[in-house]
Image 1 (cartoon, one colour):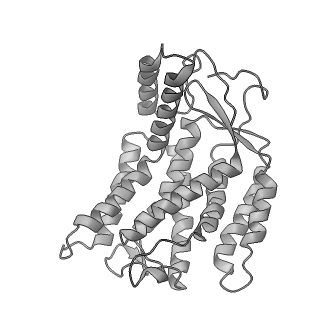
Image 2 (cartoon, rainbow, N blue to C red):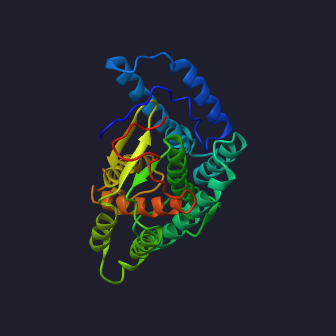
Image 3 (cartoon, rainbow, N blue to C red):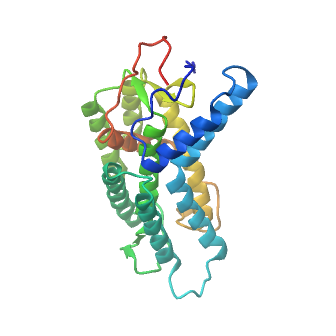
Length: 304
């Protein structure tokens, strides 16, 4: 990864931030102004800002995961409200809070709803064929699928749209959106069709590599803008989701067949599935935020 720097990150205000985020951004700039632009302290500040931005982007998923773990540890078995229903209500309240406090814009909400719908459709099918299962409790469900499950997909969507603007993402050599959409549709269909015909995940994985192997993502931290191959980013986020999935299954939110006799680590093979699901997520986000090229030619000093 190669950095490029600028001396005045406040000179070009961040576009696309919600009002609370813009206020936090201004306060952070005031706090960090005057910090050294070289040396260990500079590196520490950039790393700290990166971690904080990632945590802020994950706020929906982090809150939902915290609720799932808390329900596992402290929710009473004899409560009049089923645990799955309580999780659904909590997820709805989190989503309402994201809108009320303007942490998500109305423009972003529709793509998050789309994540919810596509995820719930997959859940209905996958539970029916026995890929995984939920506890059969509560009334806020469709068939065997509690409604909070769709919010887990929405949490991925929330992260994707928030990280796009928090890091002011730009892309070199991004493939045509129509081509990426076709591959994403193929991936989604394969999640269903591989139960009846050949599993094409490796063919689809090869197509993903073919489309994105030259794409480089530029993401702003504070003073520094870093460049990293986009496929590497996809892989990293897939690993992160897999770790969260292990926490979710440990908390009993859902179980895979091999976990029914006692919790075990989710199979690392699921990393391929999450990687491919990432492609669907990324493509849906590009329907809201068109991939933008860097503002300056490669190798020159970038604006902050």
